[in-house]
Length: 105
Image (cartoon, rainbow, N blue to C red; front, side, top):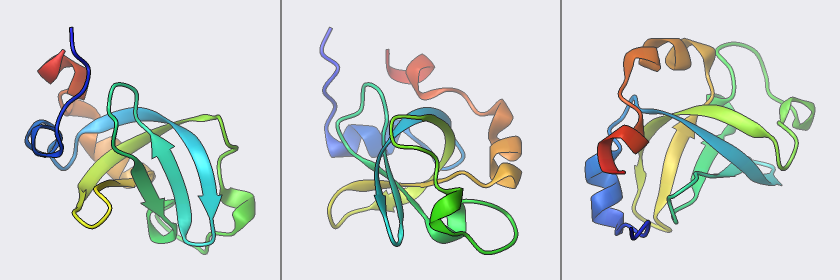
């Protein structure tokens, strides 16, 4: 089975609100990059999407290599990144969302 999907296929399969689990790959001043298993496009969590309230500092960043639960917000065409959130309020809302792997695998 081919696990490589085009950008358009990913956008059509992953709807905003879809809950996923990924692995943190990089830290930057503006947020973190997350790899999503089976998806060749990188996920991005920006600082405002870490938590519901309060300021985010580098101390709040999950460790590189750690698993994180995320929710799809949108798609960034430039660079083809999947915009993600780790906000608890959004993770709780999307708990009933169908998982990506149930849709395409």
